[in-house]
Each structure stands twice: as structure tokens, then as C-alpha cells.
Length: 416
Image 1 (spheres, helix red, strand yellow):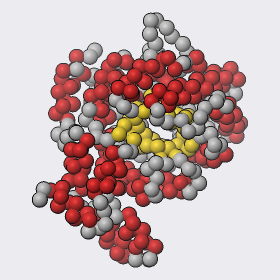
Image 2 (cartoon, rainbow, N blue to C red):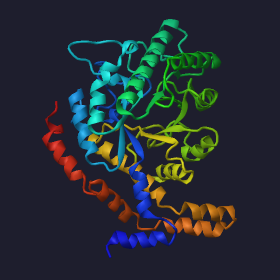
Image 3 (cartoon, rainbow, N blue to C red):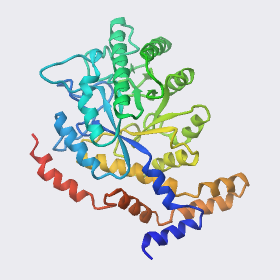
Image 4 (cartoon, rainbow, N blue to C red):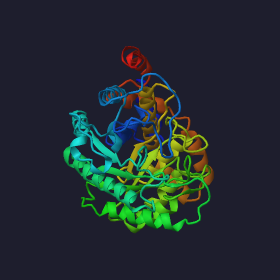
């Protein structure tokens, strides 16, 4: 008997079918963010990253053009098990033959290479308007600006992104999640907290007035507790975005980024709360150290708990999972691969928990036994299940860094 067959029997004692867990995970999409490849710079401007976010580090080999981004994503995808999507920001528009348009005039044709790349890999695409790194971010504000011209520009950008998301969905045949996030806010205590939020509300409503099929295009609103340069007040707070999504359930979803809350808050606990009220919701899964530092995702406690809450509540088809981190201090292809595999490990581990048994123990007030079973499960031979999953997906369970290192030596190290 090989190790996996033995492991199946161990899990079966807890009522867990590991074969079924593996098959279930094969059908679950995780959206991989393109912006790790080039430190969130994009292709539509020459300047650095501005507007409340930043990357740190200067590891050699950063992608600097579309061909390099696609090459790095291609290499990363080859080392990842499971089903993927690619998450694209609007600043990654690709202009050809000397053409350039500003963000309010973006069209689907500017993202055709992304569609071609997705089709080549049999994947869907997600999308994000880019409300940062642009001269029309006026005094740190976009959709909430008191300046009508500024708001109009960014509303038109949002509408253009709705049309591009619709293009993605139609071309790939897979729904496109389109996330609205801005870094709007103030560095110090504001005199008016409601005014910017009312303008933000009206601006998002104007964006959502652009026609789209909600079955194909999934607009989201994402919150943030504070940002760099907007430490005192963020317009799109958790209360604001959750209330907005609740009021517009027929048009948008709430999106939670687990780096966008106070350090003692956990998104894993918020997932089942929102599932009580929303048919669907979206996540950006990251790893914040002390705050929204967007470190590469690891199989840590909160990542495991996020995955468990999705699985326990039978919500794999109700929660859109996307990754969001960017580390410029390490090999960027390695960052993409390690973070994606970490999310996959957490989901597979959650699928291998005796969730039915644990719920029954809780409902019958057998709390001592529940604690013991939960602790026992931490020592189950999950690594054998992961290895079998990777084998069936045609990738190595471990030792993938050798291939990344070879890619660095032959490709990344030759970039200027």
C-alpha cells in the first residue's frame, strides 16, 4: 500500500473522503494578480506607484513590459496546481502602433492580449479600475473629490471598466469580478466626514448605471481602514462599502481584503456573517504584517481559517477568491507561485476536515470532544493528500524552486 492509500484510510476514520476533496478543489478557481510581476507599475505611465500604496524592495528581474509580464505569468502558472484566473488592473492596458488613450477612454481592444493569454490557458479574467498612480488623483481624492471634473473623469473610467469586464466575460465564457477600490481619504482629522462619502456613493452609483449583465459582470466594492498618507480618514470604510453593497445587492458584491481591517479583526469570522445576507461575496486574500503590508501569502492561521469558513459553509460557489500581494524584495515569480500554492493548500486542507462531525459535536454540546478532534486533525498526514493532488494536476508537490532559480538565471537576470 502506498502512502496516499494509507492516508486515505486514516482520513476515512474521521468521515473524510480525500479523493472527493481533491476532485472538488480541481473545480475551484483562484484569481492570480498580474501586478506582482512588475510591482504594481502597469503599462500606461512612466512614473512610480502613488496613491496610498507602495512596494518595497529592489530585487532584480522586474517585468517592465507586456511580453515580460506574460512570460513571468506563464512560468508561474506552469508551477501551480488547480484552476486559475488572471486578475488585471486597468493600468495594464496594452497600446499598439503608438496609440495612447487616458483611463476614461479605455476600450476592450486595449486588453485583447489579455484575452488571448487567458484563452490560451483556458482561464477567465477579473478586472480592477485603477484609481491611483495618475495625475488626476486630485489632492488624494478621485470618486469622492469635491471637484466635479475630477469625479467625472474617474466615473467615466469606472464605466469603461464595466465595458471591459463585460468583454472579458463574453470572450472567456467565465464571469468577470470587477473590483472598485480607491485610496481616497485624508492624512489628518477631516472637518467633513459625510460629504466625501455621499459623493463617493453617488459616483459608484453612476458607474453602476453602465449597462451590464450581473450574471457575467460582478462589480464589487472594497473597503480599507486607512492608507499611507490617509491615516486619519478613509472614505471607503468597512461600514460604507458593506452598507453600499447591501443597498445595491442586485448590482454589486461586497469585497473583503483581509489586510484592510484593524489588526484584531479577522475576515474569517466575517465570511459566515456576510453569507447570511449576501448570495455571493468576494475576497482579496493577502498577508498583512501589523497592517496591510501585502506580504506573500503563506499557510498561516488566518489563511487556513478563511479557507475553512468557505468550505464549512458550503460556499465554494458563492465566494470569489482572488490573491492580492506584492513583494519587490524577493523573486517575483516565486512570490506568485508560493502565494497561489498556499491558498490551494489551505483550501484542500479545509476540504479534508471532518466538518460534518465537528458541527454535530458543536450542536450536541460535546465541546470537549470537539476540541480533541480539532486538535487531532492538525496532525493528520495532509502532506500526502497535497502530494497526490499535485500529482493529478501534473505539477511537483515540492522542489519547484529549482525551476524558478533556473528561470532567474536564464531570463530574469538578463533584464535591465
